[in-house]
Image 1: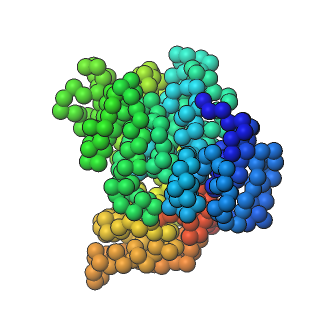
Image 2: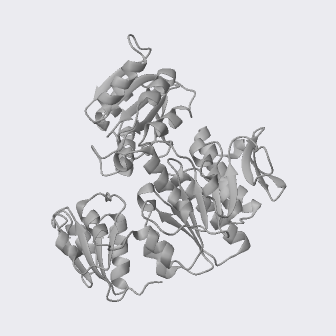
Length: 463
């Protein structure tokens, strides 16, 4: 554990992670320079929420002079590493870190880390629930802490944690790309094109994700998706025990989870156990079934009881903004999948329904290809309602995929509220109205959560 007292730390980015880390470091006696490009006025509420002792604010830009005397530079998750001040810190050989790295260095308890292109939050939430079930059944008094890229940064709970506790941590590629610590149990759920506006190439993106394995030891455990070609290529990087998950039984006695005849199984140490019938899983879509298989594998790595695994799965109903049922209106079922910030995730949502679909898609492009989504729109969608900056990109991809007359309508709307109104004009009994944008929310909203909340609000206002 570091001695923070008297250290000078430059914290770049006053978002959720930066605020939590600044508060923690200031409490430990570090002298924090909290730097954000936004104005002091825009940050008024945030500034008032933090103690003035040991925190100095520098706003309105990123002046290089704040690096003078710095012992450490920390970055919030959304801060690009090619920002001039970050590049200058690296040139001066000032160590660069983030809240997740410092948490892994300082935590007294074991950590489960979960990453992937999709399914991270759902899997993290399910594993957290299973951990709580296990502790209540087998080890009362122990606590499972859940957070990271979701919820509150775990760094803010560090002083409350005990060695017998467990942390379940969602990790993004932004957090992982600079990390030099790995969790004792590390899971990579899948790897599909994502965040290429940040990482530029798929190879760079995979490299960032694979950092979750890099610093494991022979005593640690990796959980990987054997159905994903990119994660299979990471088998050689596993330093300890490997547990895989996938839809079909493995060809050998490998520790794994799989689906067979409507049931989910765990195979470990040469023994096979039935965990749960698929009918007891409360989540829609094969992608969510993969998340459950991953959660079982992670739970096996953590030695949770089969009773706890079963209890957690049958109780779990999902998390907000992920194929979240909103209401029935005009005979149609409305779903909020605002988390779908990539075409791949929107495809998974479309594959979850057999009913006629009215799809609301758009948002901001992440420099990802829309062609595959366009093909699934052709297969599954009756009415396509587009909104946001990516609307014309999606429309162009659809036109290239289905030139000429299309078997579905296409409407372009100014924003999400207009898209909801347009979708309501098409909605009829038996339909599914699905918000699964495929793009990020930043063209209109603070984040995907705000987008989802506003969608729910506007859908509930329909009359």
